[in-house]
Amino acid sequence: MKKNQLYSIIAILLIIGIYAYDHYLNNKEKTIVVDAGKEPKSDTNTYYLPTSTTGQIVHHQNYSLSYSEAHEQAEWVAYELKESHLSTTNHKRPYFEIDKAVKTGAADWRNYKNSGYDRGHLCPAGDRRFTKKAHDETFLTSNISPQEHQFNSGIWNRLEQKVRYWAKKNDGVFVVTGGILKNGLKTIGDEKVAVPNQFYKVILDNTNGRIKMLAFLMDHKDSNLPLYKFVVSVDKVEALTGIDFFPQLEDSIEDKLEASSNYKNWSF
DNA sequence: CTGATAGGC
DNA sequence: GCCTATCAG
Image (cartoon, rainbow, N blue to C red; front, top):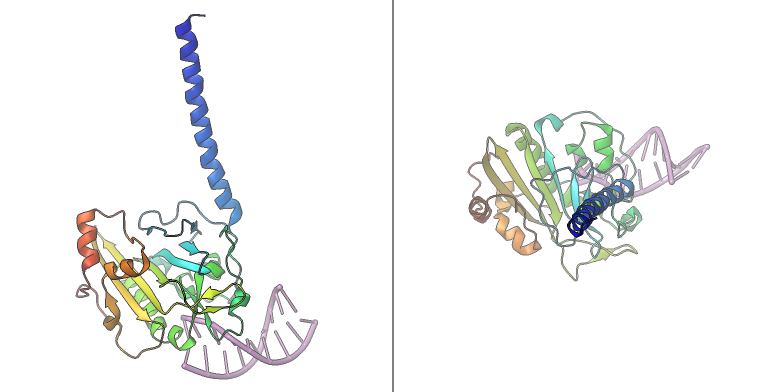
């Protein structure tokens, strides 16, 4: 065999090897995601996902989240609420379940027991009523945060209902929700689940390529004020959380939209 | 809608 | 632990 032929064969084998190894790594990663969770999907909500400050993004079939082990809850939960998702179907309320897809171990629901705080959904059960599976999936402990009942059933509930109104009106919106997580927060339970002092919700509508967004920042207490009083710029929420919400958007569009706290394009 | 809790098996 | 009934904002 000529020297050149030998080199060619080695080169080809090397390329095949690299390709095979890459394929192996990809499959390995997918396998972990699939095996670890409760039927999570690896390609859900890929476009508008925010960045993760914790490095642990988990995809479920009907929402995605970034888990903060330090605070034992998600720093964000993101999902698309399409008009077709809106449903009045009643499902029996299931038990909360530890999210096995969170590799560092999601909080146990018992941390909340007798804590005085609600197990407050981040992705609301009311937004995932289109199938039993979608509904049950919101009852994972990675999707909840300690919330005062007056807040949860009060202004926060009003905001969630308004989001459903916008989803219907705009033929779907993209939603990102979470508590403002930081050091030194009050905690509940053996696992020290942090109690946020504020919660945020960022909403994006993309109708025919005309993107608009809206962000809310609320103190963790009930209020009778109108919802528009809580509108802030996305930049404000980014400054508080360190999260980059829509990195996929073209910078010029992203910068302009995220700096604005104007809500004239949204009907309340 | 948003939830917790009591009591039976 | 699971299930049903009841209650509250």
